[in-house]
Amino acid sequence: MRAMRAETFSGYDALKLVELPKPTVSDGRVLLRITAAGVTPLDYTILSGNFHTTKMPLVLGNEGAGVVEEGGGTDLPVGSRVMFWGTYGAFEDGTYSEWIAVRKEDLCLIPDGVDDVSAACIPVAYLTAQVALTLAGFRLRKPFWHQRSGDR
Image (cartoon, rainbow, N blue to C red; front, side):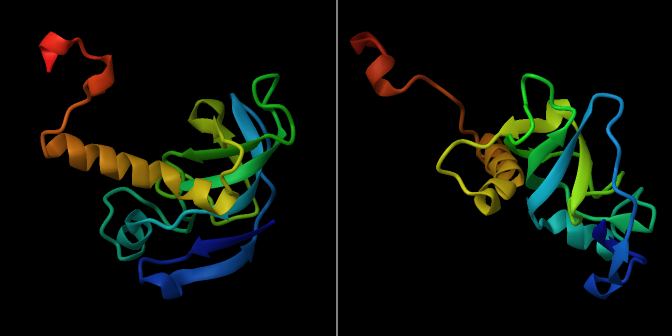
């Protein structure tokens, strides 16, 4: 399979198109055919040598979208469209590839009406917004129409 792999910690010029073996399914993982990969600030942090534990060479990309090809069971049958994020691209090969074996618990079905490119970018953007809102002091509460009149 083709993949864009970082060979050194020297910026985006370190990415090289390489041929790698297609991953196999084992240990609760699901084989996906990647349809879109998210690009996040973590990729640049790793490529510039500012991430603490990454070893090169490494296929970057910690979020993406794809189609289940094997190992999804009845929850995620072959052909299911999924999005995911995780330690991929930092501690193990990531989404800048044609295929990836993803932990089943990292997968989420893509809703109808959401294209794969959009879905590939949702996980990290969502978490970033959630952390920012939490740090700013926002908290989840019931919408006003669910509150009793005395609670307003």
